[in-house]
Length: 614
Ligand SMILES: O[C@H]1[C@H](O)[C@@H](O)[C@H](O)[C@@H](O)[C@H]1O
Image (cartoon, rainbow, N blue to C red; front, top):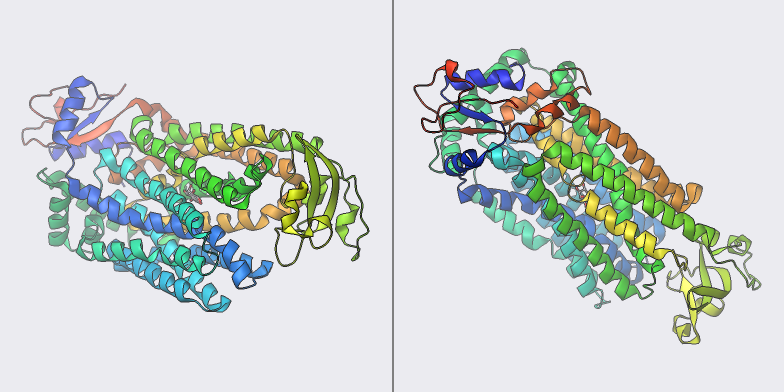
């Protein structure tokens, strides 16, 4: 295998390839702009592939709003609600893992076509479902599509992108994920007014982008890297020519080809790819970094914060359900807008700094959220009224709103004077709807005119502004880095032979931790209380920071074929390559009269290779 980054360069140089390492100066930028201008076809490819990310975001996001209507119309109990939400994520975990072999075997294009076909079928099943079993089947089908798309799309985009734009284009996929979540929350808002069958539109609308992607991909090419790996060199050259426009493709083609030959020599007799990954140092380390990043993304608690946003907003004084739905849309809009910042920053500051900065901000804002919850708990309104409980429920045992809220069976019924709660009691929630109590003053939802408030899931507090600020800061910190970077980095760190399997494993880890964190959240809050849970996420983020600081190398600007070299040293010394952060690499035009002796010389006229290390 080629050795560290710098030493591949002479080989490339013998090819006449020109490399620039070092921050682009004014002249360099001019050169860069001139020689690596990107044909718009790459953007078309990125757009159609990223529709897979959009569907991932839409289908995971839309279900919360749909559930509000579904549980009433189909009379769903808690188990069925949980099944409908987590079946999709569980199916996504399985299909992401299986997607590795499919990708290697059938190629990226067929896998994306398969995913969009599955999305379309799932959307149709969901929109015509007559009962909960069919709904469950539809949600599982959609999950199968999400899993395949989540691991294939970043790989495809990374493989068709030129090195200087790769980070940005792969991050666009993550932008489409949060975009899908945002659109889903708006669609939820719009159709929440249609109490009969509104959920059919919410769940079924995903068919539109799925069909669009399917049709688009019939005409779009396979990844040239996969084609070359399968020995289809003519076609690979032709595709590379199409996506690179009028730029010379010879050196890129040769580098990919040489790298595949080298890999094949090393791979020897073959065998199970996952075993080969684990027994080969650099790929094993890359896999640990990739899976670790995906695990810490989920352990940072993004999906509980998103899920919890409605409650946080209710604490902040938003009492109306419809208003809460729209404000939840504002939350996903914030997530989306700050992912845009990530797209803008990824090629400027690089993956490593962006991830580190994002984790630091995420940890600080989680601490703020925890402090906000702690203050709210310490000042939680006491239970002052104890009406006779006809069913002797556990709710009568709680002395404050906070304790009452930790029991999913109970809610808080009170009157308000400014921010002060009075005449408050802890009462069982109605089995039919969490909108009112099972009996007593708050059992009739029209009683609000009496000044009575029924709080389920939140407590009135005057510290809600801290929690709200924590929420906004959390999204602003998480979305540019920890949201997209795990996907982006995973699409780049594996050599071609290990790329499908590596991405399948890391995407599988993402989905497994997604299920784990969301399923355990309520239990965690019951044991640790809300502030304890958020302090726990802060602790996990600190671990993530140590991991990323020690293990994540910078991959910005490197050719995919060179990235494996960053993992040649022992695990978690690869973060040392941070020393390379100030180097900028780009490959420009080759020259036939290149001589290796000219390395180190800056010659902008004759377009000959040079390297400058700062
Ligand atoms: O990168 C995405 C994104 O940040 C989403 O908002 C989140 O819901 C997903 O779990 C994550 O993988």
